[in-house]
Amino acid sequence: MTGESAAGRVLIRPPVPADEDAYLAAVRRSADLIRPWNPVASRPGDFHRLLAEISAPDAESFFIVDRADGGLAALINIRGITRGRFQNATLGYNAYLPYAGTGRTREGMELIVAFCFDTAHGLGLHRLEINIQPGNAPSLGLAQRLGFRLEGRSPRMLYLNGAWRDHERYALTVEEWAARTGTTQSSESGRISG
Image: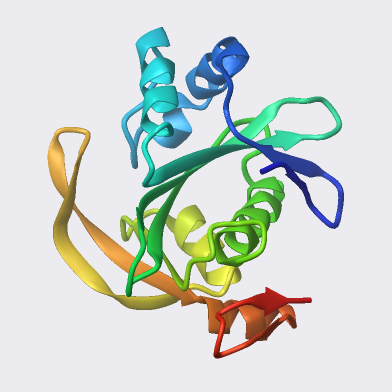
């Protein structure tokens, strides 16, 4: 999937091997921004692990790319894609400097959420989750601006940076997204149309 935001500031595309140097540079310059919430994956082997992870059937990743200069603004991971009766996945993300705080991650996330819910050209999911550490105000704000609602708090949910970390669980269904964006959804097929 490759997409473009309505404002035209960002493009969305999957990582490819040629992105290794740009990815490592983006993570290294953003290490202080990432480190409190996620491990800093800044070694060459880390990028190769990312590429291996997205070859699994339950995972995808996308870069948010700034159209003006081609820089990597963020990485969005879609993990735990579950089919059957659940039709769910979990989103994770890291924004990169100098783009963090400029709205580009939000624009890209809107494209990703639309892709996840799109039954014609996307994943056709019914529900998305985002799990965020309570002190991570920028990520909490992003989830809320996208329409995700708080479902609860999970103590010691994920092992990150040497400790089990509490997370707040946010979720969004295709029906909530359709109501927020003005798209329509057929209750029979689960299909969204504009």
